[in-house]
Image (cartoon, rainbow, N blue to C red; front, side, top):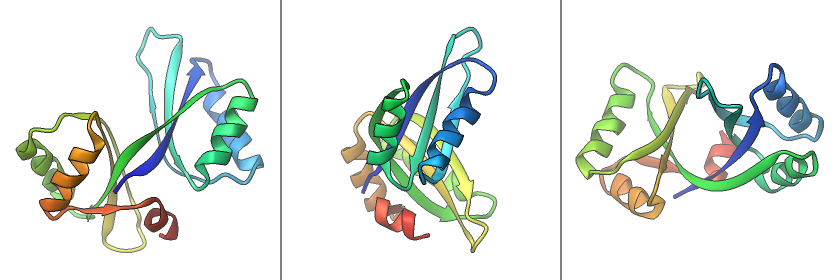
Length: 145
């Protein structure tokens, strides 16, 4: 199971992330999860997002001159308690998979947390994590939360 993720390549200037968030909000796009990487000396930053309407968000960002791409990530559910994230990461370690990116958030509506994982071979990672008993969420399940 995979979920759509958007990467917006932004100029490394103050307020640019706020501009993107406002642009999406003005167009009814809800950002469900995001991660921003600042590489120090780079003049660009990657803003990774999971949104409620990927296709519309890509069009809106591109029309506004923002370099944007779409990829697939795995969204795993884990208990929201000490060791929940470690459980998933130890499972990944045992499979020999290499994590390219990771960000997580707590739902605070229950006892679950969400972990977003990026891998080079997303299909293989999905199979291995599912077989190991990790609950993976689809776009539909994530949006229904």
